[in-house]
Length: 119
Image (cartoon, rainbow, N blue to C red; front, side):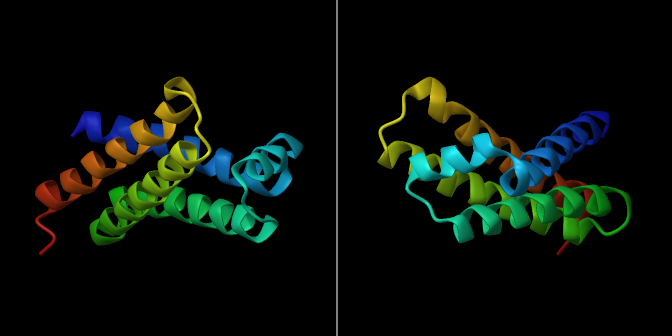
């Protein structure tokens, strides 16, 4: 249970600030151009990352089903990010964080499922 709590805290903080960066960071603007993604896609990505971060935290403390959905959604988002990295032929080191976060969120989603007996 403590491991899940630590992971959720780590993931929530990471996605919250990365998501905000999608709205305000010039470095992020350049990264999304490099990815071949539009400004709208950058903003949508940031919105879903902040939403997922908040959903994870609320899910752990109040509504487990929300945490499960948020973790699954972030896993899908990061899988798509990994696909974009592969498409633009980034190195393994550049692509690894998206793969890592996709797997980590999938683990958290299944932990929510098992721990809270959602269905």
